[in-house]
Image (cartoon, rainbow over the protein chains, first blue to last red):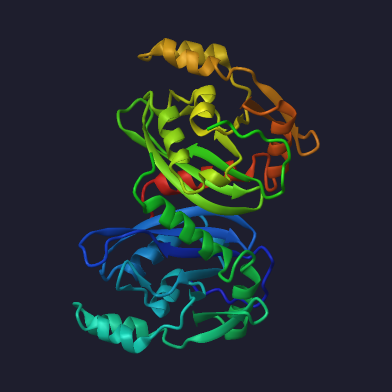
Length: 198
Length: 198
């Protein structure tokens, strides 16, 4: 399938925001990953879920599969990720994810990624070269000023023109400095995977 | 703690909407129950989770505990339930839940509950008298017309004046005939508890 080009941004553009849930760092096991479908910055349309290995190598494939196999895939226009490292150092290769889902990918972080620190940390892990290659595939980081310049976020965008990516991020951050799809993905992922409340 | 009386409805009134996830009817086991905190009909503020027994007797206690132990409890003003039967015939006794959480309870259904059918179904279950008593504690059903009379929902309200309960239901149903807290609780509960997408 040819990747969908995004040129116009409708206020109700369908976005899936992806974030991981709670996990114990440096352990073996699985971590929940949640995808939340939002219409622009306005309302929630659906939820999807997959599981990836803590510090594993399957984030790109599992998140890609979750999106492609979801009933929402046909309506989606953008994938937003909470950074590119999931469940520890299970790296999403944004170029490869773009190929799998045929949609623009925008990874967003509040802090500027420190690639020197990441590269050092990767040295202690298996497949460190492969992980670094996945990181490097989406290494260009762009600063986006939010809330009339009062706050800044950092984006890595693939399969979308940078000025359009910036506009999507700004226009869907209706309640905070982070687009609603990602803010709510974080609330759901952390709320559902913390110890049971009873 | 004295129950909080609700007299004024702020547009951003904090509501928790509670719904159950996927389960196989007539089996033994647990079913996820999700609570979604919404500010009025507008935005999601948090998510909580518990588990109850399929056809069990613990819905009131577990849902009550989930709400009371959540960090959101102090801000909440109303609890909304997707009806009073969870995970099959695990009945929420709305009067008892009201006592536990010290908040008004509004159970909402799209169809008018058929108490004759429910009473018949309960006869095949253990504790049928106790279950029926829990149902009977919230048996008064009120019709609420939504969307300028085009649609109808049915509510059972405890600890809140009926006209105020109606206003809360109407004013928070911003995207459908169902208050946002319940619409989104349903999307999350069903999206997260269906088989994994990968």
